[in-house]
Image (cartoon, rainbow over all chains, first blue to last red; front, top):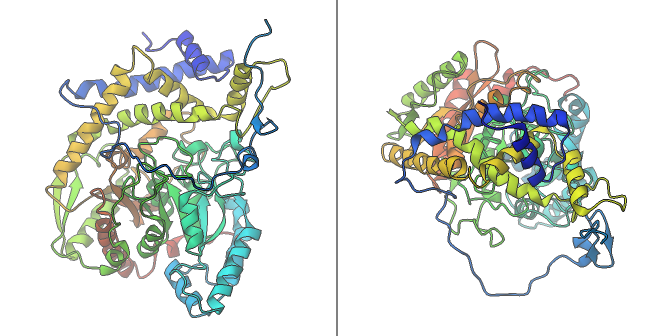
Length: 98
Length: 499
């Protein structure tokens, strides 16, 4: 049995906001099955007593005084925007017509 | 022409005013004009900016100002670091034409040191790959053999060094993207301790693994560049607030008597090319002659490192690459007034990302989804703990660990593009270093007898002990050059038109 179905891949593509053709989904489902088969080995080794590591360093929260420092101007911040209006990013419609 | 000299030699000539920074930059642009149509190391050349920067250095030198040691020496910058006003693509169509409004901290430090940034180098899209074949702008070719890959993801940076287009380069290393390209092009590359060099302005792929670092043709040049870019940065919350060890002194020391060098048992054997193993073993003999003691160490969990990496890196990538949403920068596709923001996002990401990036985003989205999280991402994080423990235990028995950098020499372009798993295996010896956040270096150790292509020797040092890899690397490099009577790149065939 395959580890992942084509419908599951289609759902993941929807969650990841990437539109995919039927041919792409078919191809990716096959590849994902092979890759998941290989990486599933991680389940073989670590027991319940092993804590997870999410980061290589001992990271702790970094806090500092709130200081005002120079930052990007609005025009610099908007310089890479596909569309802008006055001092704002302009986005396609986010609500339906109704 | 000075293009074949080391950065240290160029710096000395500049200091003695035997050559100007402008002339030195122009020599490199001439070489780029002559060979880069074949090599394709660069995605963008900022000739105007670089020459203005060089003229500024010359002016300061003429005025007798105190300059940094590498002032006026040219450099190639991997296209994953932002440089204000200069196109930054990460090898992706989704960022085509984007000009960042700010400099990465690494770039700020390079500019402050008077290092001349010639241009931006090619890479696998968002640093995902081992061959640069995943670049949306076409692959880079290995200067040793133009039908072969220059490694990846930083193949543009490594190829620019091997083709004498630049004496210094910046790379980034998430699972081996500095070290494997160095190995297959006969150059030197260092992945510093995680947090040793700021990630501010480095476009994120996998934040807990990504690390920028220096690339060059000699160990000393690599150390000189490392020293320029290293250090605490308040703009990066994972930056280490400690003094960087004296890596330049270590690179020059040439004394490894009594050092204990651990050979990792698991990083050899099945899957490693015969010629790679032979050159690695010959280098161990050189280390023994230099007075080091070789010990074998076992890191049993390294066997699971590749599998864990290909869950952790895609998981972090699926989250990091969510920022490419067609709203604030980059490509926007299908915005004809009738489509919703979500539809535009779907179309933009479909058009803007290449196959490998999509594959990893989907894999990461899967590994992080409820119901699968514990089995995949959670288990991978536990493996990461076991790998860290393996290193901790190994470093109680030796000062540094060593292995071949990559299991094979440079393979043919197109050979592995349809087999993702075969491609992923290139990183098998480099990934453990990233998982534990420690330092790793690759330096050339000879040519494999099967194909006469360069082999990389990897040195791994504990976190914030980066000086140890420079100490061992500097001594081994000197011994090998002494044995060969020339540098490894002197064995490389001359590129057509090369100056």
